[in-house]
Image (cartoon, rainbow, N blue to C red; front, top):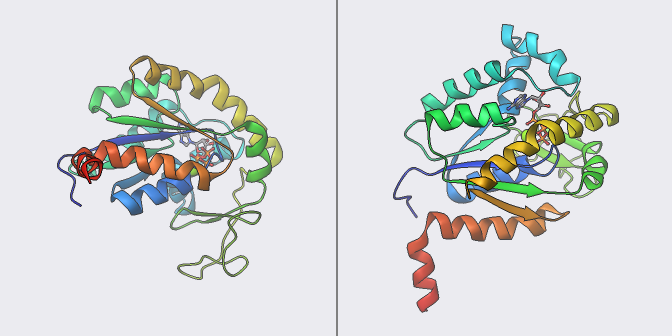
Length: 226
Ligand code: ATP
Ligand code: MG
């Protein structure tokens, strides 16, 4: 299946809501280009760029990095994939960021993953990450085939410095205060599509069905007639 036009999607949800996992599935199923602000920042920290070094303490403390810094980083990346359909993950996180995004492009749809905070707290402390790819594992419900190693490359997994109980609490607070207004912003424009649940595997089929209908409306008609 080939997309007829460029399609731009934003995925939102509190930290640990399964954004990374769902994004991976969307990218694989629909061929969108994945743009993750968290992955971009972590790549900068790993490469010890000036920006990465400046932002590390902010991130480790569970605070948002300044709007202008992250906006510049994301818009630069976006320019290089201008001709592609993309999925934006982790941006916008403030209303100011959403307005910046609006000023450069029009977004087709915003997917909101809604998971209770209590579920999230349990999840994040058992989360492991393959840093180069952004692949996420959870030792409770989505473990790697070999403990501590990435399924695809066999490289070691890490735990994020900001996945400690205290930092998680702070990240959830910042989500409530700074990011929930972004949901309202998109809801008032009629762009928000919310998917609620406690398990990624149960939420995913609904997101997949929604995107299939959005991206390939012509196929839906064919299925309906059959
Ligand atoms: P998860 O990886 O489970 O989605 P998360 O949403 O908290 O959790 P990332 O999106 O990976 O994590 O972001 C990690 C950190 O990077 C954030 O806590 C924040 O400090 C910083 N960050 C990422 N995106 C933004 C943004 N759009 N604005 C400001 N800070 C950001
Ligand atoms: Mg993420």
